[in-house]
Length: 265
Image (cartoon, rainbow, N blue to C red; front, side, top):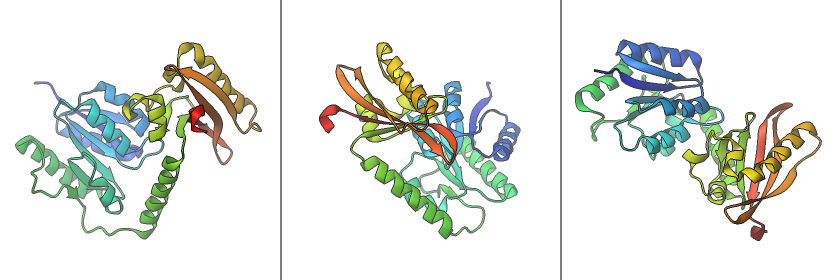
């Protein structure tokens, strides 16, 4: 009988190793990823029997990863366990995700007992009972004001960006997409699983890609240049792109591309 397959995604190296060792003791074959972007790539190694994913990760977070995994493996049995140090603060948002269990990070010895219990449930009953609490906490946890305020701030900023009339695409230093607003997805006629971690030029006709590549290079070579505007013909319509450099402090992190149709002006 082939070994069960598990994917572990967390930007904490030591936590990935902890979960990997625990799962290997349970005779799982473990695939490891150390951030959400790498986790999306490792989904190609599936299908998996179990996925463990941290919720808060830079660039591509666990919630995005989980949604894509559910879509990708819709027709195969898959159990997803979300793990985070801010489970309590995210209760409202987490209730809407397609996750089988939520495990709050805590002392590793307690977490090992709890995760083994979850794996026992999967083996014995095929998953969580409807009347079972899906939120697993190592002891009594209380919302932390600082963490809650940070999440509220991030959600507010996401709301502002989503409310802008044009589409926003965030592109990593390797020119792969790490975030896109709903308006950007609409304009590009793509779903999140189609666009995340894909090369930005792949969404445009080959004959138009050179213009975008030149714009990306231009704002890197001349950082005093605030933006480059280009027009690209795609799917029998014209899109106007505004390319800007994404910087955090003095560090270049990639690009931000605003997308709009000329008729939107």
